[in-house]
Length: 114
Image 1: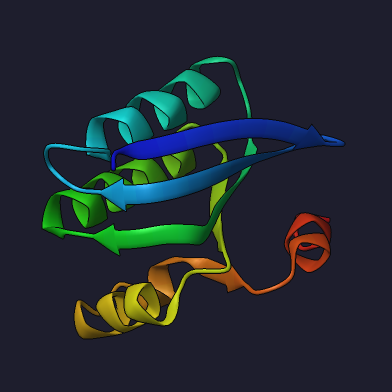
Image 2 (image 1 turned 90 degrees about the vertical axis):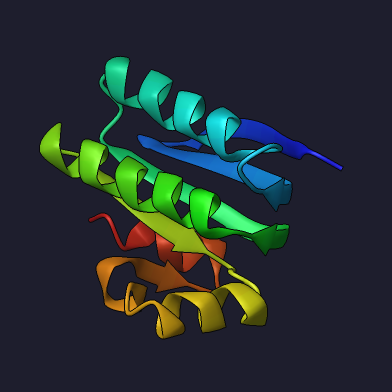
């Protein structure tokens, strides 16, 4: 199964519901293109909902970090919503957990931008 991305908006916050696998061959390029498109449209507040992401490999993690960096350079913010235990563990092991503002509640994630 590849990755599926569904974008929706709440106020000035864009939420991207991500489901499936984010790997070198399956989803990392789709995630990269989605973040790039949002950045290029001038979107400044992005939440990636990882509640349905089943697996992230090193390429997927690299794209996530790259997306965070490109949004920050453009004056935007990228936050994570509902990462699974497996993804939280990956972020801890790679010492990238502190890079992301992580939320377990959608409303809280949206409010965190104000």
